[in-house]
Length: 266
Image: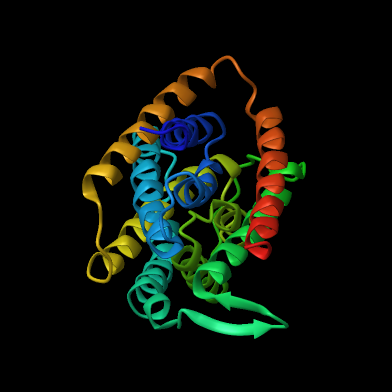
């Protein structure tokens, strides 16, 4: 086992620790770890990421269901268009994209480069959302109001993004639940985990027929992430989540810039 592989498995553990500590964000590291440390093709890496993200989010969602924090009606309204979009993206859209897209000067933009560049842009957006102080995140209990058309549109958009990059999209889902369904912040975070779990695992099903899956590797990687979640949840009793979230946001920002640099200098 070489150094990169050991580092990759340690990364799987860190993904879970971050998820356990700040309730999200860690999954955005999954694709870079799989691509740059395990040398897995980006299309396969985004598929594996959907499984890891979905399984990890499911564990978090089950904990929140026990605490009574999940709003099932909102989850259903949001998850239905999201899971249809993510399944269709993985089953039909991603396989339909040609391996060679276009050339800029002497630089050939391939499907793999395009996926990683798009992923890096999503990382940059996620980092801004983590770094920024959301002072308007109030936990006041307002009656839940639904803006159904916008929730359905947002669900579909998040589904397509999840399908392309394999990330959970919590940084898009949580603001949507707060603004469009008027959920208090704690309920929005809890409900987003259930939505992420459903759409990510459904999206992964769309890949099973198209890709060769290394199940042993995938289960080991996921098991380490799950172990990390329990470690992170324990550590969250001693470490303030807000400061960590901002620090992790800066790390994700630099990672996004690094991916853009690496892909442009192939």
